[in-house]
Image (tube, rainbow, N blue to C red; front, side, top):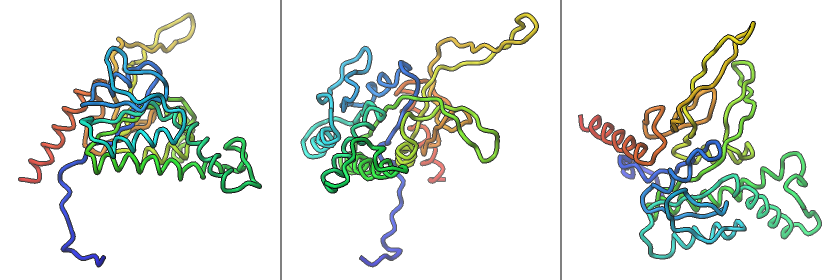
Length: 264
């Protein structure tokens, strides 16, 4: 097809979001996801959002079963509006197993028993092809079926080697760094969920001791800070209450502000 300026389209209406929400265990990621419009769960952890029912596929025990569930949502009639995948760090071993299976099928003389057997990180590079198939499935559901997608993940604290400062610890998604980078790049939002805390210092003997203080308030962070990864493409406030209602309201407000600005 010949490309010309006549093919230009104005992209003004945002598509349903592809969201990654991560945070400490028990913070309420699943409860947040379960409150999204008409959710359906691809269950990897054999759990469910607390306090609320949700339609769920049988627990997926292979990468093929994850893709079969997504294919069913693509091919069959339904009224689900949000796909919830719980969780990415439980999906990762299935991706590794699928990568190993494909290698062993294609290379009978070079069998892998673990993803490390490829050597020098080559196994993790090979997993990216499998991850891309999964992300292509998400794109198909979002683009062709109009579904939002929420992917949950656990957080881990790891050292970050900044080129501008001394190394420091921060929260990151609990995935291998190559997979994490690919998932983050693909997502429209990477949201960090945590308790809101402050630090106070008090005198204990001859020294000052720092203590974390909080009232149990749960928040969503939408912009990256030194302490955590986060991003969004919807011009959201940097901090929101941890609830689907708060996120949806902020997305609607940002969209309306963009519309009014364009009209002016």
